Image (cartoon, rainbow, N blue to C red; front, side, top):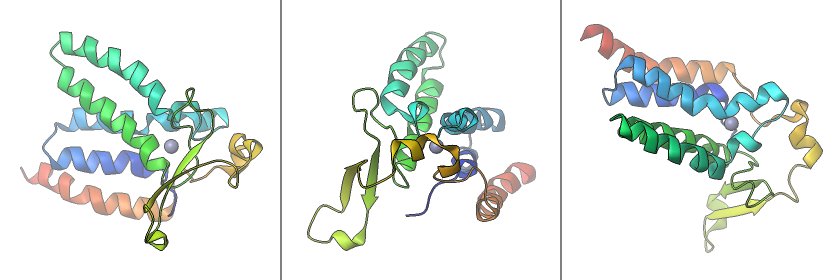
Length: 168
Ligand SMILES: [Zn+2]
C-alpha cells in the first residue's frame, strides 16, 4: 500500500468536513488537527511519538472533557477522532509508534488480498522492517510531505465542496 503523505491528511479531512456542512473556519481547524502529528518531521523524525494513539487519548480525553464544560464537547470529540485517524491511516502505509509507550515497537497494518484464508488484517511489529536508525533518520522518511500526485488528488477532492460554498 502506498504511503499517505501529510498533505492528504489535511485535504481529505477538509473536503469531508466541508462536505458534511461544517463551517469553513471550523473545518480548517479540524483539518489542521488531523495534520498535527506530522509536526515530528520538523524534529527529524516521522511516525514516532506524535503518532502514538495512546498519547493522543491521554491528552485528548481531558481536553475534550474541558471543552464539553464550555459546550464544545462535540467539537472536541471530532478533533480527537480526526487526530486519531492520522496514526491509524499512517499505520497502513508504514511502521508507526501507534501504542507507545505501552508498546515500544513500531507497528504496521498489512492489508493484503494475498492473505486469503487468514485474517486479511495483519499487525506486524518492526523486525523485518526498518531499523531504529532508519526510523530516526529523516532521509528514510516513509511518505513525503507533499507530492505532485497528492496535490492533484487534493485539488480534485476540494473543488466540489469549495464550489458548493461559493455557489451557496
Ligand atoms: Zn504522519
